[in-house]
Structure formats: structure tokens, C-alpha cells
Image 1 (cartoon, rainbow, N blue to C red):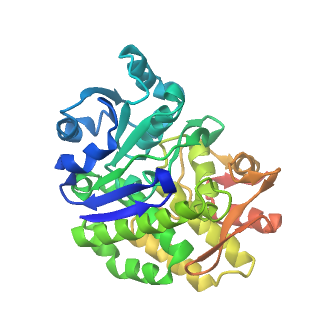
Image 2 (cartoon, rainbow, N blue to C red):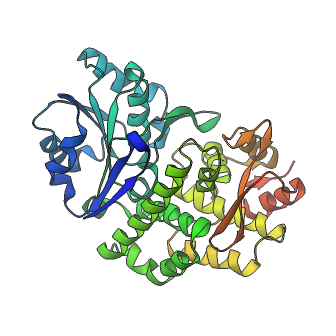
Length: 368
């Protein structure tokens, strides 16, 4: 088992990574302060892992909430069943919520924990690669709005993260690839060496080689833990973790939540960020092609997919980007690249070059 730490003084917490650790009660018990637990999962994950999770908390008054599966349900109304359960059972502020599932369940459970009685504890048990390498760590919680992704939420850190790599055995190939997009992101923002390692080991990762997956998860979590410890509320360098996300969130919103997986949208967004960087002369064209090649090896899209009658105009795309959380004082800030393993946060980009990027890489975008 691998143990990492997110260093936030009195709110520090461990990340446990390993095979079969979902059966280890001793890892969890120190982080349940009261006698009440609510496990939140969805219709896909509950049949697979809820029984094991219930055994973890067999010594507590434990309730369950099973939500519908999908990004489309990650709304304010979607968290009400969690709040309803807490209210019906009159659970107090020592209750612990447990997120058993992927990034959607983690975000929703964490947000419910943040607002119930003005904040209660919660534990992350991520069961997808994307959640294990990214969304379960760092305390970002929230829900979507029809006009923008993750625009309603709170920073609320978990008590611990328990990433059992055995749960990835039941993950479908598309979801595995979506998680690999976030793994690749860490290489692009911070490590040329890790990018090279991914190129050498992408086949093993796609084939679910345990040692390769554990290394990728460890590297990603350590990188994020270090960044979060230095900038918890995204006042500076934590924004680098949004590489590809401003483009990606616009794609998800425009196509309809769930039609393009978050990791798939981020993959496309990273290609667009690389393209805009090339147009500014900050990144070599060959590096952009290397990024596209690695994403394709991970079976990820590198262009916006066609979605029937949905057509995103350039103006609509720009409007969605303007509604992103990375807008400050009316000015859009983008995470761009100035080398392999090196990214920057910039508001000093050419709007005409951004328009060129949208036209070049968004096959479903029409100009107006």
C-alpha cells in the first residue's frame, strides 16, 4: 500500500492507494469521529461495492443513499436525496458522509457535506481512475448549472481518500481512458520525464497493469497534493491543474452533460490549449503532435465529436468560456503551455489566435 499526505496543517489528510484496501477497516476508523455514517453511491457502483463498504462501517449507525448515475444528475436538485436522508434521520454534525463512486459522486457528496449543518466530515472512496488521480483529492466539491460546469460549490477537504485499485477492474474502457486524460495532464503541466514514462507505459496502463496503474496514480496524487498544499483555494499555481478545462468545460456544457465524458473533454481541451500555445510561439509544433499521439494511444478524442443536430457556434463557445470560473474581473485566464512539462496561467493571449484555434480544432463549431 502507498500512503501519501495532503499537508494542510490541522486539515491534513492521507491518501491510501493499493489493492484490496477497501476491506481494511483499520484505515477508515480513525477518520469517523461520531457514530453516524451515510454512504452515498450510485446505481452502477452500489451493486459492485456497497456491500464491502457497509462492512467497513458495520460498527456505526449506517444509512445509504443511492443516486442515479451520470453527469446529467450532478445538479443542486440531485444532492437533495442526501440532505433529505440526513434530515430524516436527524443526523448531527458529527456524521460522516462517504462518497463511494466516481467524480460525480465525490463532488456531490462533498458538497452535501459542506452545506449540511454548515459543514460535516466526509471520506472519499473513489472507484474510477479519474476520481482516484484527480477529483477525490483537493477538496473541490460542487454541482453543475445549465449555464456552466461546477459553478456551484465549495472547497471542503475530505478526512481521507481510500483508492482501491481493484475497483478499476470493473471500470469500462471508455471510463479508464477518461481517467488517463487527467494523468496526462499532470505530465503536461509539471514533468517531461513523466510524459516520457507515459509514452513507454501507455499500453500497460490501457491493459490495466497493476504496477503501472499504481505508479500513475501515485505520481498524479503526489503532484496534486503538493499543489493543493501550496495553494488550497486556487489563488495562484493550483489553477495550473485546469489545463484543458476551460475549453473542456465549454464542450461538456454545449454538448449536454454526459454526452462527452469529462476526461474526453479535457483531452480535447488540452489539444486546443497546445494549439493556441503554438500559435503564440510558446510551444513547438512537434510537442503538440507528441501530445496528440499520446492522447490517441490512450484512446482519447482530440477533436470535438459530432453530436447530431448540436452545432456550437464560435460565439457560443466563447460565451461559455467567458462564464468559466477562470474569469477574473471580466478577463479570461487560460492555462497554456510554454514547453513540455511546463505550463503558465495567461490572460495575455491574442483573441484572434484563440478564434483560429476554435476554427481549427472544433469540427462541430461554425463561425458567425
